[in-house]
Length: 458
Ligand code: NAD
Ligand code: UGA
Image (cartoon, rainbow, N blue to C red; front, side):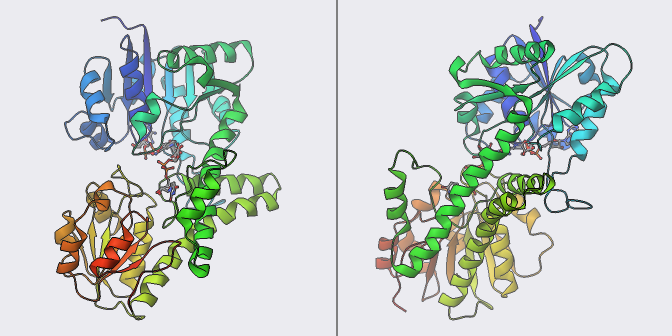
C-alpha cells in the first residue's frame, strides 16, 4: 500500500508509543514507525504483552500493528525513510556534573539529533515531543545545521500533555495540542504539516500555535502549575490535621470557585511520576541560569512540600504505632505512582517503603499492575520485603496497611474480612483518602486519613 505520509517516532516509551499509536489509529493512510534503542522494549511492543499498561491501549495496538503501525530497532534506516520525525526519548534529571540533581540530562536527546543528521538523505521536519528546557530547539537546529549539503531541517516543539492511566482518553480528546515553530516561511510551512496531522481528529480551536520558545516553556509551566496545586492542597492537609478541619471539605469549598476549579485538589502522600519533580527542578535550574533566584526558590518549594508530605506520613505511622515498627508487618497497598498504570517512577511508595525498612518493619507490597517494577525499584534494599498481588493474602497477618495508590480496587475491598485476618490493634493509613474511613473505624480499625482527624480508640 502507498502511504500518504510516513512518520517516525524515536523513543518507544510511555509517551512516544501511545501518542504515535493514536496517530496511526486516526490516520490509516499514514505509515507510523516507532523505533527504540532498547530491543526488549521493541520486542514487547511487537508481542501480546505490551511494555506499558494503559487502559484501551492494547485494543488500538491490535487494530493498527502490522497495517500502518510498525515497531523496529532499525533507527538509521528509518531516519532515512521518514520525513517527519517525533523525538520522544527520555530527558531525566542530570545525575552528574554541572546542574546535577536539577538540570535535564540531554545526552539521549543530543545523540538522537546527531543520528538524524548522520542518516538523513532528504530534508525533514524534526519535532520535539520530549519535555525539554527552553531553547533546546536552538541547540537541535545548530546540530542539524552542522551537516554539509543542501538538506534542511525544520524543528518544531509539540509537547505532550497526556497523563498516564488516562493516556488514550487524553490523546483522543486533548484539552489542547500545542505546536511551536520558528515564524519563518519554512517554520510556518512545517507547522502547517503538523497541524494537518492533528486536524484528523482534534477540532481546530484546540490546536494552538505559538513561537517555539513559548511552546517549550509552556510544557514545563503546565506541569509546574499542576504539581503546585497538589503541594498547595497537601500543605493545607497538614494544617487540617492540627486544627480538626477536613481537607476534603476544604478542597470542595475552595474548588467550587470557578476561578479555582476542582481538579488536582486531592490531598495524598504527594505527587509521583517521572515528570513533575523532574520538570520543576528543570524550571528551577533555568531560573537560576537566567539569574532569577527568587523565582527559583518559589518553584523549588513545591518539591520541598512534596517531600515534607511523605515524611509526615511516615512519622504519623511511627508515632501512631507506639514509636516502634521493628518486626511489625506492614502492607503497602499500591506501588504505582497513580491508579491505572504499572509505572512506579518517583512513586511515593518507594520512599515510604524504604523508610519503613529503615525502621526494621517487614513490608508486604501489593499492586495489581506494578509488582514487577516494584521489585526492580527495591532490588538493592535490605530488609524483609515480599510481593503479593492478592490484597487479601497480602494484608493477612499484618499490623497495619498503608494505601499508597488510588486504585479503585482498594475502595471496594471487604475490609471486615481484612480486619479479621490482621494483628490487633489494626491500623489503616489511608494515604489517598479513598476508603470509607468511618465504616473501617466501626469495623475496628484505627484509621489515619490525610488532612482529617484520626479515627482511633487508642
Ligand atoms: P521512557 O523512558 O518511557 O521512554 C523513552 C524511550 O526512549 C526509552 O524506551 C529509551 O530506550 C528510548 N531512547 C533513549 N535514547 C534513545 C535513542 N538515542 N534512540 C532511540 N530510542 C532512545 O520516557 P517517557 O515517559 O516516554 O518520556 C519521554 C519524554 O516525554 C520525557 O521528556 C518526558 O518528560 C516526556 N513526557 C512524558 C509523559 C509521561 O506521561 N510519561 C508525558 C508527557 C511528556
Ligand atoms: C502529569 C500531567 O498531568 C500531564 O499533563 C503531563 O503530560 C505529564 O505529567 C508529564 O509531563 O509526564 P502524570 O504524571 O502521568 O501526568 O499523572 P497526574 O495525573 O498528573 O498525577 C501526577 C501525580 O500527582 C500522581 O502521583 C497523582 O497521584 C498525584 N495527584 C494528582 C495528587 O496527589 N492529587 C491530585 O489531585 C492529582
